[in-house]
Image 1 (cartoon, rainbow over the protein chains, first blue to last red):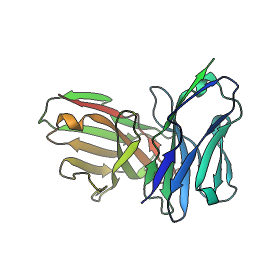
Image 2: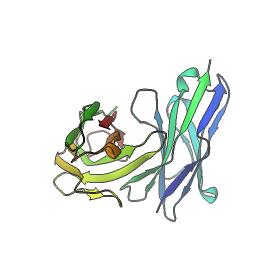
Image 3: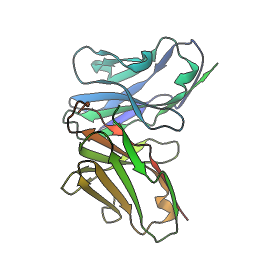
Image 4: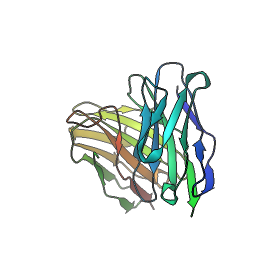
Length: 113
Length: 119
C-alpha cells in the first residue's frame, strides 16, 4: 500500500522568503507524483505533477518540485513566497496505472505580509 | 480549467435520514469519478472510485451499503449517505478524471466539497 508523509503540518514565512515543503512516499513500484493546493474557501487545484522524464518539474505560480527517486521524495519549492500563497498544500501519489491517489496530511502555509 | 461542481455545498440532517450529494463535471466528460472524505485537520481519504455504467469500487473499510454511489452518466456521480449518523459528519469531496476533449486525462479535477452535519 502507498503512504505519503508531509513533514510539516504548519509553516509560517514572511513574504519573499524561500519555501520548501517536504514530501516522502512509500511505494514499491512506479509512481506518479502530484502537489495540490487548496486556497482558503476554494477547492483543490493542481500545482504540478511528475510522471516521468526530467525530475525537476515546474508548475504554476512559480512553484517547482524535484523528484529524487533514491530518497522517495518529491519536495515542493518556491524561491520567494507571496502573501497570496497562503494555503494548504497536499502531496499525493498515484500508482503507475493511475487508478487512485493517496494524499499526505497536508501542510498549512501562512505567509505574513 | 476543468470545472467540477458539487451540490449541495453544505447540508444538515437528522440522524437516520439519507442524504444525496451530486458531483458534476461541467465542461468535460469524466471516465472516472472519485469520492473522498476529509476529517478536520486530516488528509483526504479515498472512499470509492466510480466508472460510468458500472459498480463503484470501494476502499477497504468503507461500507458500500451505507455510502451508495451511482455514476449515471459521464458527467454525473452521486453519493448517498444512507441512515446517516453523527459520526458520518464530514467534508465529502469528489473529483473527476477527464475522458478526453482537450483536458489533461492524467489529472483529477476536484469539486469544492460538501459539508455534511448529522444531528
